[in-house]
Length: 484
Image 1 (spheres, rainbow, N blue to C red):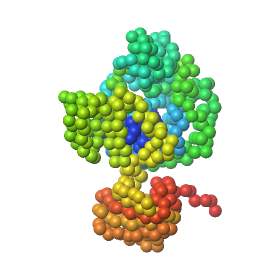
Image 2 (image 1 turned 45 degrees about the vertical axis):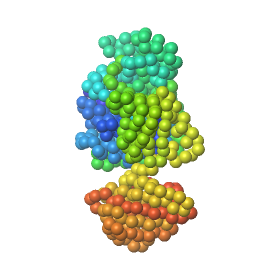
Image 3 (image 1 turned 90 degrees about the vertical axis):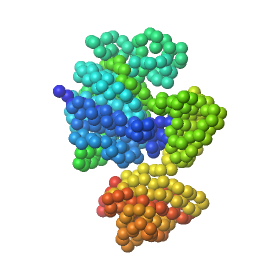
Image 4 (image 1 turned 180 degrees about the horizontal axis):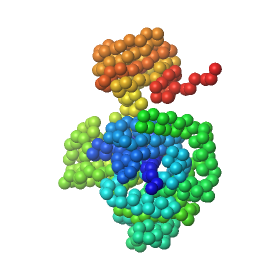
C-alpha cells in the first residue's frame, strides 16, 4: 500500500485579514477563539490521519522558526517533520512540484501526496477523514484528485469546478475549472447542482503529478528540479529540511497549480465533499466563528456599548467604548486600528496593498516580532531612540553580532542572561544591566530554564533591523565563512 504524505502549503499574506495578518505573521498563524491557530489545526488533522508518519510543510524561510513553535506546542510524537523552505513566494505550482519531487526522493513515486492549504478551517473531522480515504482511492488509479466543496450559497468569492463524467460511486471527471463568477452565474451554479467550490486541496500519486507536470509544464518542473539540486539539505532528530536556493528559485515561474496544470490535464477528478469547510478569507468569516449576543454583536476583549448592533469588535488589549453603531468591524492591534463596513470586509485587502506600496512597517510587522530565540516588542520609539521588551526562551541565543550606528543598554527584568560584551563574558541577574557601544561584538543567551525578560534601550542615528552584522548564529542566519 502506498504511503500517504500530507503536504501543508503555508503561503499567502491573508491581506483581507489585516491588521492581524501581516507579511511576517500571516493568516495561518491567526489564533481562533479556541486558542489554536489555523496552521495548528491543519497540522493536527493531517498528522492524525490513519497511517501518517511524515508531514511535509512548504513555507517561507522567514516563518520557519515560528512554524516550528506552532508544531512544538502540539503533541506530534512519532511524526517526522519535513520542510521545504522558500526564500520568497512563487505560488502553488512551484510549491507542489517541489513537494512531489521531494516525496519521490524520500518515499518513492508511488507515495500519495495530500496537499492541504494551511489557512483553511475544517470542522467535521470524521467527514474529512472519509473524504481523504475516498480521494486516496481515486489517486491510486492515477487521477489528480481535487476536493470539491458542496456550495452552501451563491458565493462570488470562490472559483468553481464543473462535474463531468461519473467515476464510479464517488468522484467525477472534471469538466472544467471556472473563475469566480458574478452573482447571477453563482446562483445558477447553486441551483444546477453541477458545480462545486474549488478548495485548492488535492490528493495525487507522486508519479502521476510529476508525469502531468512534465507533459503540461515541463519548464516549471525542470526549473524546480534544478533548484532542488542546488539547495542545501539538513537533518536533525525527527526533522529534515531543504532550503531552496534563492538564485535558481528566482528563475521559477510564479504560477498557480490550476493555471499551470489542472485546467489543462485530462487526468483531474473531483470528489464532492461536505466537511464543514471555511477558508476564513475575511473578517466576515472570522466573526461567524463566535456566537453573537442579543444585539447581534460579537466582542473579544472589554467593551462598553450603547445602541450598538451587528458589530464585530476584536480588541484584546484595550477597552472599546462605542455609541450608535451598526454592522461594523473593529479590529484593534497595538499599532493599527481597522474600522470597516461589515458588508465590505473583502475590501480590507486594499488597505494592506496601499501600506505595501508605501513600504509601511504595518504591512510587514507587528509590534511584537517573533525570532527563533523568542520575541521582541517595540514599546516606544522616536528620534534617536527605541525601547524594546525582549523575551529569550530557555537555551535561546541571539547571534554574535555588532551594530554600526547604535548603542544598546540591556536591563534584565527577570531570569538570567549570559552576555558577551566585547572581550568579556559574564552573567546578569534581575535588575542588573550592561552597556554596549557601537561597533562592539555582543551576544545575549538565556542559560536558564525560565524565560529571560529584559528591556533594551537603543540610542543612535539609525535603529533599523538591517543594522545587524552577524558573525555566528546557532539558527543558521549568519553568512557562511568564505573558503580559504
